[in-house]
Amino acid sequence: MADGIAALPVDEADKAVAIAISVDPDEDTPASVRTFLRRNRATEELHYLVAPRATLAPIWRRFQILSSYESGDDEVHSAPVRIYDPDGVWVSSLHAGADLTAANLAHDLRTALGRGREPK
Image (cartoon, rainbow, N blue to C red; front, side, top):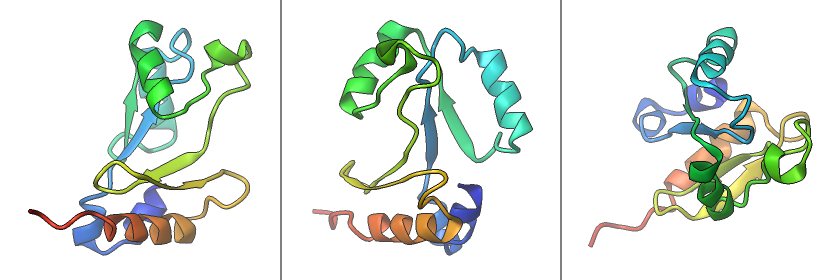
């Protein structure tokens, strides 16, 4: 993801924000997330939302995320990279191991950034 954002011109890259939302709040503690981000060299590139299940449940519903809690299996949960335009409209999804490449991410981010409404 960092490579895809880095492929954008600086003025566009500055508008892109990468956010991960925990799908397993029992396992995703602040300490485990810090370790994950350090291990993947993403401490500056990725914001990671961790919170209690009661806080995350409405977010999961809003963004149509299947959590490990809801599936009943730590290994079964939503994992795509979803791209939203500046107005919060879902523009595309990319999937690790299938179509998530730096080039595809940069393309879809540029498309999303160009979709924002003009100021009134």
